[in-house]
Image (cartoon, rainbow, N blue to C red; front, side, top):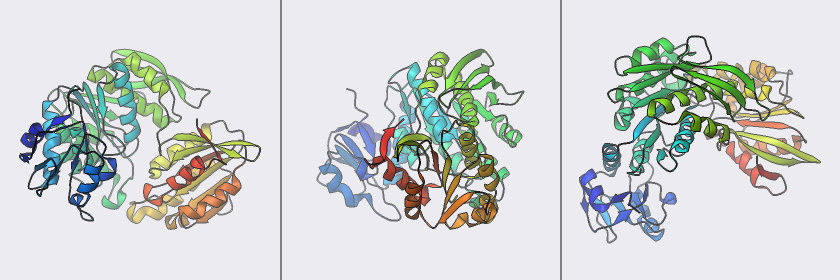
Length: 465
């Protein structure tokens, strides 16, 4: 098997010196992710120094490391390991002939990235590559690039930001042929004075487009014109997608499927495709249109993409479902615990309202972080979609949820607790057969612990499905 990198290639890419000849088949800067044959990048951060874990990673089977100090084991020495990671990512991008897509947005970027990867991998099995988890920042993006096999034909990279200028740097590293913006919402509002500023920061993704590149923009966004203006100087072609009349890629004949997904016909400029998207909600319908636009622009197979979208499972923390036991039956637990902002909260609650539920609708909602001075209003504003979703019981988690608790008052049966740990027992006590339980909040609230506790408990869990 062709190695991912040889020590000579690494040394040349990062301007370092190799102590020995070695090959690597993977790489990481987190010592917990190292396995046999991997490259470890010993980065120095604000909290810790990767050089402290060198014995551990070589013990785990690392084939070599990028370091800024001498050691006995095989390594490439450099002055700055963080710079070396960026240089390695840049070298990976330079050596590939793959068609590359960059994905950003305030909501939906990870799901869209995973859906696009699944669609392209179905087109050409084993030849698609994407950033894993949410590795979308100044370290995650070059890591994901560096992990791209040289035989890759399609690459999909998620890019995130919480300050202006960050996406401009990331997109020039990725150099996409296609760039998608999923949606604009008040995420990371603490760092921006308006949604318009967020839209401008997201629009930076187009600055890295390769010559002849394609920009894919949400037609239904109130910030569409700003995004189009950001794309025009850099894109040879701009495609809009959405549910509204006038989009270049739009949905027709939209019908809810029995499994909670949606059947639809996607109309593209030069093709039509009737398919089912397995994931529930209008936001998934919209994002699937962006995916199909990217598949066509990248030279993928639209029919294969439709099959992939129909088969796509829920993502951990972003829609994965678990069946959990209740006295005399079972309930469904919907894991949306990875992240939350006002827009994604509303979309997920709307999706919950549209689903067929035999029992009650229960929500465990955690605080939405990084919303700045408008945090109280954003939280209180969730009262209306909670009522519209016919929620029977709400468990609100975190200090920031106080305004929502006040806004709901006596309208919805509710419990407000300070942290995730305090929410687990009230939820366990409440679950009945046929219930649908939505768990959603900012990742830092730790609601994933609730999902894990119920999913791993053999007395309550029936696994995923």
